[in-house]
Image 1 (cartoon, rainbow, N blue to C red):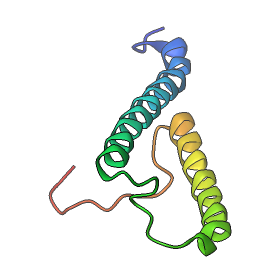
Image 2: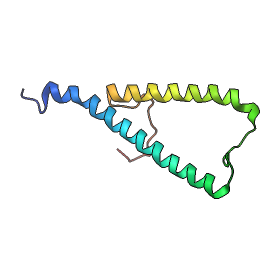
Image 3: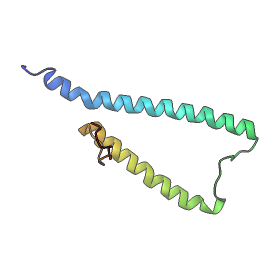
Length: 95
């Protein structure tokens, strides 16, 4: 009781962090969708940002799956522990 917030505040932190991340993902996806629609409309091409041919589709699917799993694991760790699972390099003198 003497501590600020106590157990309830500590228990609510992961939930707030999770809601914040989910909200950011929803807004980010919406912005990317609008940007992609503008690019497709301006160029008239269905795949204006394609960098490789259709032969890379199977590899891209597996790479996408691995990236998705890594991001989910990172978010899971961040929501529960409040820190990134990988130490981010900081510039000297920064906090």
